[in-house]
Length: 130
Image 1 (cartoon, rainbow, N blue to C red):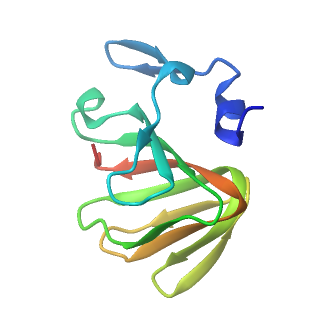
Image 2 (image 1 turned 30 degrees about the horizontal axis):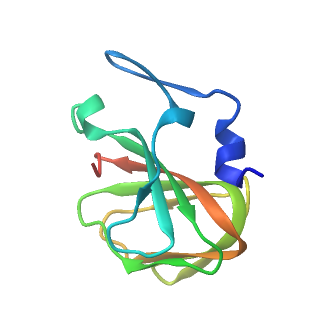
Image 3 (image 1 turned 90 degrees about the vertical axis):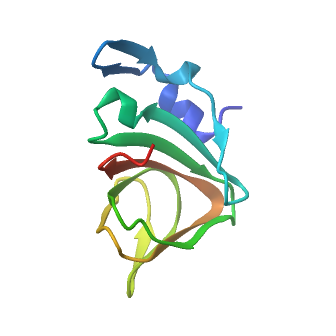
């Protein structure tokens, strides 16, 4: 059985970047270097956009978290693709459900915790994170 993120990618989504295209379903999941239970699929890297933007699928296992952290140099946009959870953005709490988006300004402390079925985000960083 596919998880929610794999289900989203099973439609054969192609990512077009300057210089070519890539099949998102074929890109590997990478363990987050800091947060256990979090995996990243790098759809668009800074090298693709002269550092302007990067885009990543973020899969958070049930009950796991991207604990409180900050991006001093990037704005971040989350779009909830599947699952549920909650985000803390500064002093605000945001219920994360499919269809919800959240803008996180650079320099603002934030965290994301997945609910019982896990959580998949489409995260974009301006300028690029990677």
